[in-house]
Image: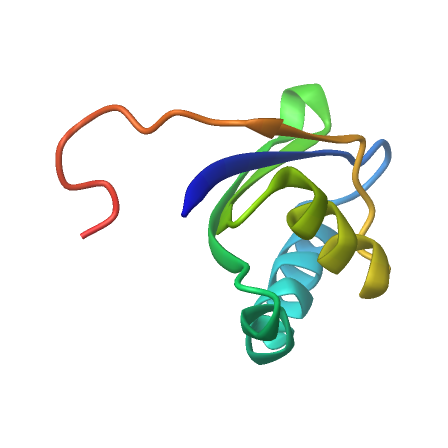
Length: 89
């Protein structure tokens, strides 16, 4: 599996709105797993109105497809590289 970062530009969203979006993303976990995609977690950066969501999956196309299918807003999907020990344990 490869690591991908989904960039979500959430202009005007409150922290509560972002929490609901992340909860919605987590609710789709079973459906995403069918495509081999797993949501690892998210980081909201309020000052930039950006949320970065980490996923593993077979390809960026697969990650993009599940986000589109579930109507989760995003700007782009980029390859990620895990650094640091124990982040996925």
